[in-house]
Image 1 (cartoon, rainbow, N blue to C red):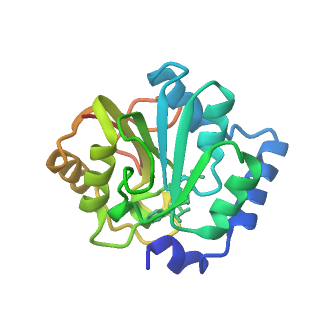
Image 2: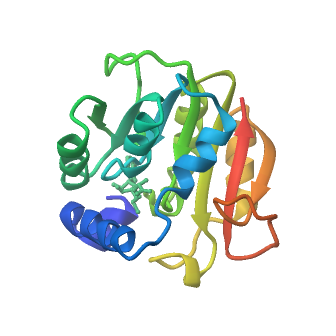
Length: 201
Ligand SMILES: C[S@@+](CC[C@H](N)C(=O)[O-])C[C@H]1O[C@@H](n2cnc3c(N)ncnc32)[C@H](O)[C@@H]1O
């Protein structure tokens, strides 16, 4: 069982979507992740939203002219994604064993995004396998973008994954760190409790 499922019981899709809708209603910026990705690759690029949840990042990117696929293990989250953007491809799968071809999806994505603490919420011990899956899904030169918390203030669970661990998994998967920021607005990374990392295949 992954840490997200342990935390939520696997039925939190509607609650998660409602929380973001409320933030948007309050005028909060809820599209930072999509904006960040859109600054890296042009419209028309193919994006894999890894741990897509309710699909909020990929749905936004699709409205900006991107094409893509969302993958998540939580059926309650995917139900919201499918309802909101039925024209997109949403797959229920475990990222540690995800094989695009077997799922009928062409690999060679231009960008893979893992937003919203996906890596710290994986089943402990599967981080290397997930990094390898995501690297394989990219075209040569494609980008893996992952944003996640590193301390208790930025995570809904006790921290277990360090940036050094994450970088080591990415390196083992054939990826090279190209950039690291403190926020989705690309503020410089400051050794703080949240990082947005960009690796290139
Ligand atoms: C906090 S949610 C983030 C959702 C979305 N990326 C966002 O930013 O709104 C974390 C997601 O990671 C997913 N997840 C965790 N482990 C997974 C795995 N092994 N395979 C697929 N999805 C996974 C969970 O189901 C959950 O939807």
